[in-house]
Length: 217
Ligand SMILES: N[C@@H](CCC(=O)N[C@@H](CS)C(=O)NCC(=O)O)C(=O)O
Image 1 (cartoon, helix red, strand yellow):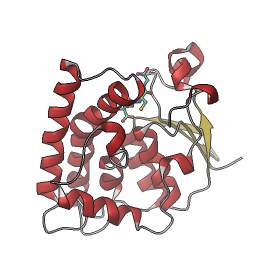
Image 2 (image 1 turned 30 degrees about the vertical axis):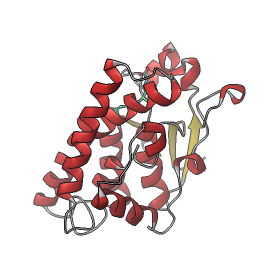
Image 3 (image 1 turned 90 degrees about the vertical axis):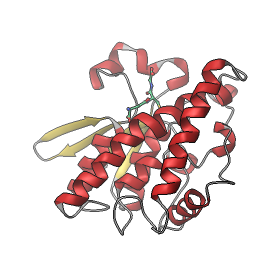
Image 4 (image 1 turned 90 degrees about the horizontal axis):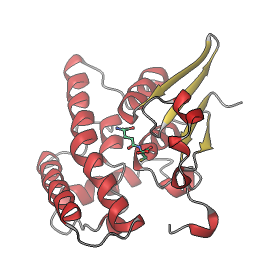
């Protein structure tokens, strides 16, 4: 058995953050498919793994037993401590990373995920809800673009888990319905992440959460 099991599916940008961290850290891990699109996260068995009913879920198979962590920000923090990679190194860096993880959860992934879901997977059209999410995400992207001005990485002078959190959904601009034409710092930062040794796209790291006959991506 691998040292880490990640309950995941490749359409999930939240799962991608954890998978990317495991991949770029060279960790010993395996992906366990969650059939999200047929409702596995709502089943009682999944709720015993995660009371919040959300992917990703990380289980660390340790000598003292299995240790399970949920919420992508907590998983990234746990992995950075256990693996000693992409971690903040000082108290100031710790808070810098933390505030970007929180910003990501509410305003970046927190809007990009639902916007992509409604536009790309549900084909909802340009409803008021879609327009609201688009506006909120556009504002968050402008904040990120401004914060990246003159710097390579968002929280420190090195890549950290904050970068992996914020980019979780951003390699699917077409599916979200956005462009980076007016966000050059974001575009350059994403290219920097793609150039990290061992980088892989979500689809190459995890199985699909869709049933094969229904797969749209
Ligand atoms: N704040 C959570 C968000 C996780 C999340 O929204 N996961 C989605 C998949 S991307 C999910 O499992 N949703 C299940 C549901 O809403 O029923 C995190 O960062 O891990």
